[in-house]
Structure formats: C-alpha cells, structure tokens
Image (cartoon, rainbow, N blue to C red; front, side):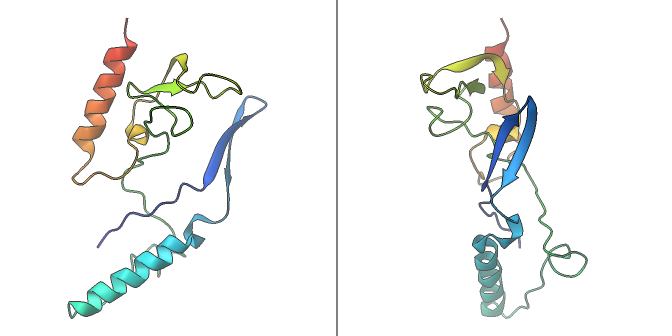
Length: 140
C-alpha cells in the first residue's frame, strides 16, 4: 500500500546566486508519516493482514522516503501568494512589492512540480498536458 504525505516544509532560496534548500527538520520526522504508518497498520489488521513497512523505511534503510512522482514543489496558483507559477507555467515575480500576478519573463516550470498535489490516477498524462500547455504558451 502506498500513501502520499505532505512534506513541503522547506524553503528554496538564492544565496549569492547559489540555490539553497533549507528544511525545517528531517522530513521523515514529520508527524504525518507516523499517522500514515498507524493508518496502514490499522487497515492491514482490519482486513486480516499484516503490516510490512517498505524496505527503505524499516529494514534496509532508516526511514528513507521513496518519491514516486515529484509533484507540487512549484505549484500552479492564481498569485505568488499561493504558488510559484501561473496556469501557463510561468514563474511569478516574488520580488518585494511586486504585483502578486506578475511573472518573470522567459522563466517557466515544465515538469510535474507545477502540479499542486497528487492526482487520482497515474499523473503522466496530466504532467504531459501541462508541459505541452506551458511550452505552447512560451513559444513565440
């Protein structure tokens, strides 16, 4: 059984023209993962089964996360107050005092990170459709 957890607790920023990532703590220590594990155990027991954690979570590794699709790191939103890109994949200008709908010329996100979160089915076609839309709008 696979589950999704919310783990976007970090910040990405520029430091002297170098991209830095600063996490609020160890991702695996986020309480959501304990809740997910408890839910999986309860579901397995309710169905007469036995909970067996993923090998990299317990066994071969020490709480190593497995990322199936990198969704939501640069989510689509109506303004820079709620996300990173507009519906065309263009990156918002997050400068202090900038109009929250203003975008940076020529800077686009063309991958699954623009999708705000998990989708019901395999996200491949959703990611591809958004990428095609972004590229189509980016080209002159």
